[in-house]
Length: 325
Ligand code: BDR
Ligand code: CA
Image (cartoon, rainbow, N blue to C red; front, side, top):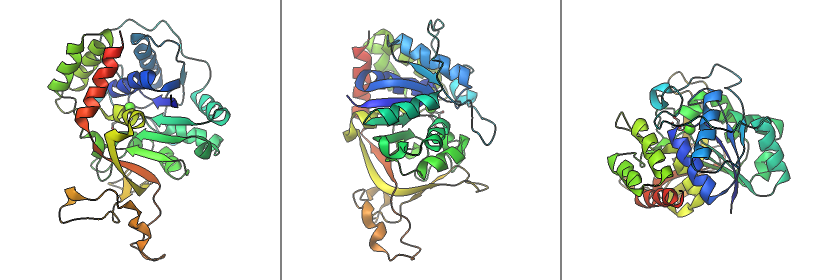
């Protein structure tokens, strides 16, 4: 099984990421970061999810409460007061670990071969780990993030929430040289949490499935929700679910309208007469242009998720929920 650490800020969609990772990956630990909600809430929520699915052996390490450069902005409008409103649950019996998330990430990656990192919240902890030990970028097997978007935002017209919350951390990560897989909102918009999806979960009837359906009832109350974070985990579990393009992505730190945008260089994808027909396999054309030419751009640094097989994604989520009690 693939060894992973999941850094998250649960979050209804983070909860799905945890539930899938705990079953299909070797989840060495869950680390938490201030994002959707404040750190004590998201840490409690991670413990709740693991308890609901009977995985209390997986440790939870709290990390940074927010960005080092500015105040944290949370999203109670999306996730509710607790950061993961919906199901009524008893408080978790377990406490989180004493060790800081960044210590856990650095020690685990540097002392274990082939650990893949997954981040489904702001990149504050991952950037701090890279600052502490730059060797992580090469030692880790890779990093899968939910964040950003190729020409799409959700928190602002240009920026996605996780990147916007701590753009400086994202800049550090995207410039670190780590093998980076980006699941942005251009992809997760293909993953709706609609009435059919929720009914499908509820019909399974296991405790985990009903818990998941109740998370979705709240998450989708406004009628336009997407299961963002589960897509990043799903890509690692089954790479055939997502088609991607290898592109150069950089983070806008200064734009007055575009701060936090993942500026994605799609100029060298082979185009046909219609944009929807873009040939995603033609990503290496960046070096067709001479060095110094403004059209050459920079070498690709990110596998950018572009197309999701939603039907198969749903089947796999259902299978996960069926396998839990
Ligand atoms: C991201 O922000 C959070 O609200 C979700 O959990 C997801 O990680 C989507 O923009
Ligand atoms: Ca999240």
